Length: 148
Image 1 (cartoon, one colour):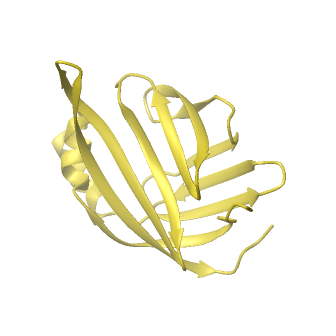
Image 2: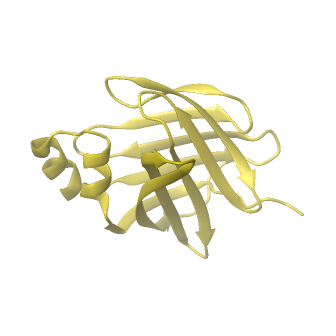
């Protein structure tokens, strides 16, 4: 079964729980307020044959670039610190595991029609081998046709 092609440009249409997620990452109050009003777009290039992807998150405040091959660890720029990151398929979903200054961090992307879903998670604590996480969900609408 072939995997979906994520290539395209997507504009954020909504998000839930973002400020709480940023607080769990120890982002200061003033920066959280600024970041929460941003409406990022995602510019995704995806070569389904080689598994190479480029995901550029664009905002008026700062841009983030990820250039990677599925299944291969890479260093991701997360601001003042980096993370060892791996992105793999889980069915039709892209699942990312990030290992860096905070444990239990990652995200999942999937498509439903022209809607790109993004769920981010951050582990808050671990008690008796049970992890407590905080989640954020963002939705992005595809506005530009697929480009290769």
